[in-house]
Image 1 (cartoon, rainbow, N blue to C red):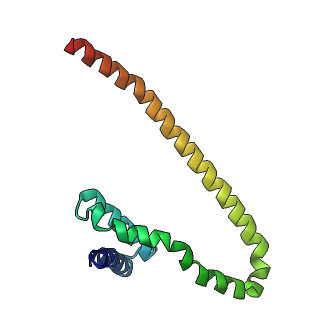
Image 2 (cartoon, rainbow, N blue to C red; image 1 turned 120 degrees about the horizontal axis):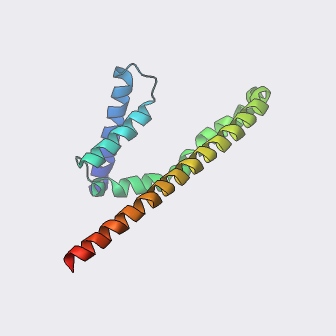
Image 3 (cartoon, rainbow, N blue to C red; image 1 turned 30 degrees about the vertical axis):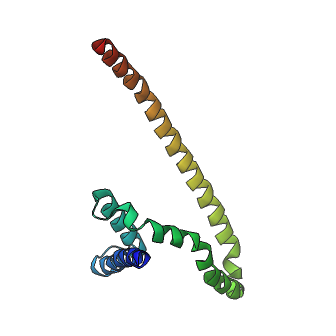
Length: 133
């Protein structure tokens, strides 16, 4: 029964994302609205993690199965896509490399930022030790 309730919460948030997609004039997919809405609900505590964790873990575990249908459909339409295959592959490679580069640069910037704040934290701890002793 608990699992059904968790699925209902996830389905309700997904439905709200669909409604937002219909109501708002922005070209944003409904799934993105749903994800952002779920993030907001989790961060504000309206929905607690334990209220959706089991169902979410299950959905993540079966996610590869969800790609079987679209993959078969893509293979069936390969003759129609053959003319666009080379440009698609080039675009996929370039965007993958750009995404990897941007992710790496962002991670490095965050690590540097954390390391630059670390000495301040250590200094603060030393001051606290001097005060307490």
